Image 1: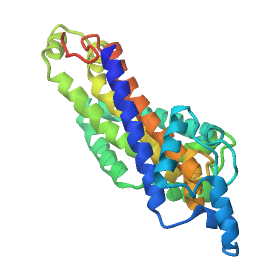
Image 2 (image 1 turned 135 degrees about the vertical axis):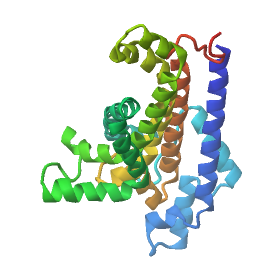
Image 3 (image 1 turned 180 degrees about the vertical axis):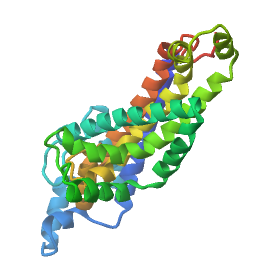
Length: 308
């Protein structure tokens, strides 16, 4: 219980740091959201009146304290552009991002586990797995996405170019978003499985005549899952940041597209809310990964040592 409280405390500190950083950075940028809202033809009196109505005329430390008080109450404020609550705006854009993240994680598991395990079992799979790991990490999302659109949507006409109408709309962005994670996880799976094969219990089971399939399924893979789950859980949070570019390329109205639109409009409350949401996902995924260790391997005690 103490470990969970400690992790939650660190999570709160992380969220506070992210909130403070984005708040200060937005105020440093030499751009006035009021002028963007009213346009270049606005008179100084109109600009000052709107700035006062939005609370942007207050000293920076007063705005910061009001911002923190709002977060403590669960109030992320209202959009400077639409006047809607930031929380409702985020919720409205959440479903496409969640769908994309789930599909990307499933694609990652489907690709990386067979490649990683195959490369550890048979040298014939080692070269394809190594090539995919290197290429997948080297190819950027903003290049891979348009390439997939040109090939599968425009030339072959197999999949939609953009939108969220059906599951087919998520296939290309899912591939784009999962490629780098799949490449990285393939290496982790291969390395983790190979390390387990060098341990005494594996050799003992082989010498006793157990099949390789039985050993992998019942003993080796469960023991190798902790580093794999760690990377998968931590990188799942990174899917949200990767989705920013991917959603823009495929015109998906998710959290990433919302952030880009809000930055272009200098909509401070929405930007702050989205950054806090992404930071919250990171904190939650880290906590879930830590709490899952005893379920994966009973030898592990949360906050303790292996083998206690």
